[in-house]
Amino acid sequence: MRIGHAYIWIGGSVTSRPVTSPENEIDGDLFWIWRAPDGDLWLNHEEREGQAAEALETVVGTHPDLSGAVISEDSPAFSGMPVGDVIGSGTTFIDVRSVEAWYHGTSASRLPGILEEGIRGDMPAEQRAWKVSDVPPDTVYVSRHRGTALGHAQRIGRDPVILEVDPTILEADNYCDDRDFRLLPDGIAWAAGAYGDVDAVSASLTLTGNVGYRGRIPAEAIIAVHRLGHDGEWEREETPHALAATWR
Image 1 (cartoon, rainbow, N blue to C red):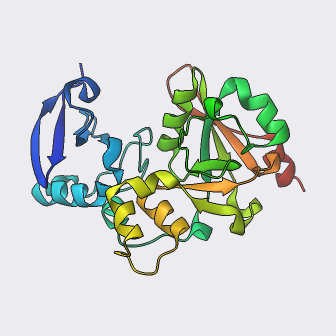
Image 2: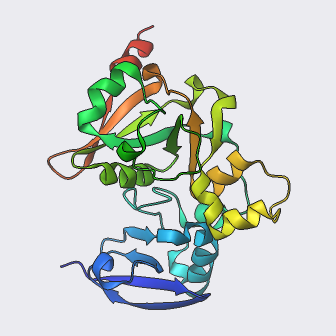
């Protein structure tokens, strides 16, 4: 039994209490942080990811001991990021060209075809994890957070895998925003001009960590596959494309 401590934010205020299983003991519509006994920090945003910076700033203001913590890599969003970076993520906009790796979640059954043909953006709607109607039909969605990619992979079915994509092989002009972010409070604020002259791709990347890529992501851009090992730890395996590039 892992009895950790939960910090729950709603309406600008923070409450805290001991919690063993946050997924079962805390209402999923709330923004919460759970600190496990080993110090691992788990963050749940549900529909409130656009308010993550505000929520975390309030939590850290009342519990400064969390200020130096790092979000768990398997948390749904902001995986592996220091709390301080998340707090600043709503004000310091990220250029898509600065991202060192993209992550895309899928299932192991699709892996052979993907490694041969690449990640196609023309998948039928019923086969997509991303179920948004107002998107270009040829769009692949990627995230800079591995945990977010995992969440979408788990929606597809069993045996999820995460693909690591090299952005330097992609065409910069093919990026578009993740339309989901426009439904979040920060996305609505961006649409209303609250963040000034910030383009949609940068706003989407900063506020949700996700963007779209129009067209096919070529197989040679997929440099690694992340799988869950028998010991419960994630294992990173470089693809033949990445290995071939190393020996060139």
